[in-house]
Image (cartoon, rainbow, N blue to C red; front, side, top):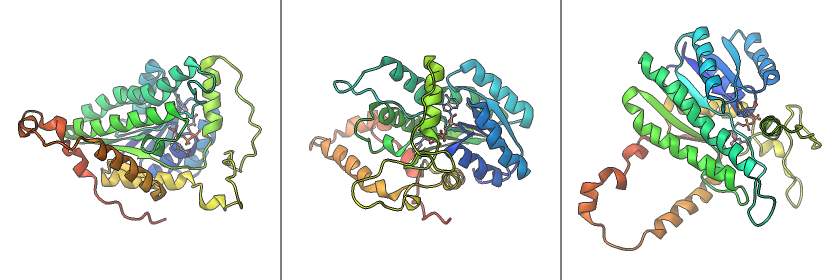
Length: 316
Ligand SMILES: NC(=O)c1ccc[n+]([C@@H]2O[C@H](COP(=O)([O-])OP(=O)(O)OC[C@H]3O[C@@H](n4cnc5c(N)ncnc54)[C@H](O)[C@@H]3O)[C@@H](O)[C@H]2O)c1
């Protein structure tokens, strides 16, 4: 989707971190912005940027697990700006990981993770896509997955697998929505400095009816906790952990290019190559049955991957 001027973006988890970075970048393109987030205080804080810069933006309080609430939020967005064109399914949580056989295996966290990180994405698609199809002007969908969905991080069963699942959702939608002129991208960031620990704790407390956790960790001026130090001399974290505004610019570039995958960190390429090579090696060394290919062409080969072209270096 090349011309974003005057179009409307509905961004879940848009009040903080990557979602806010995406919202700012969309606003700079002349878009109307809908910040949908479950934390009203974060929405109020985030809206200051848009108001101060004269960018059209509204905030709607929404928990993406609430399907009725989602319809109301979409109605409010349409009442403010007319048609919706871009949905960014960015709301997500980091999960206190259940480790079967190692730590406490808590089914409530499994359910919550699926509700937010998987079903929350589907709720957005179910609510917003018919509205984009209906106005017929086309649009674009982005879901924030993670590098963890491509290169699994040991110990993070839920996070890895649910991010992997939404990658598959967006690949499938890229096939299914082409006919409606709706593009589909999956955003797989590496580490960025955000409030993920804080907001995840608040959402978990809300859903489980418990007290929000108290954060003891030192925080930077944006409220984000630094990662634990690696062994050896301290590296310069400002050169390692990136700013969400950059993520936003990359996402906007990906929307304009119609990238299927929007990636941020070339450091992960070796990890991905190793995974892809392992899967290739696992195909048995046996001849292909040409009749199988004739009968099931779409099962054996999906041409959607051909839309992804080489992405140039990002110019800051
Ligand atoms: N920060 C990273 O390094 C990183 C890396 C890869 C992927 N991600 C993903 O990026 C996305 C954004 O997270 P972030 O890191 O910017 O954290 P963040 O806490 O700064 O922003 C997330 C926002 O989503 C909101 N949110 C959470 N659950 C919600 C729900 N159920 N309904 C509505 N709003 C909800 C929070 O209130 C918060 O404002 C998440 O999906 C996360 O998994 C983050």
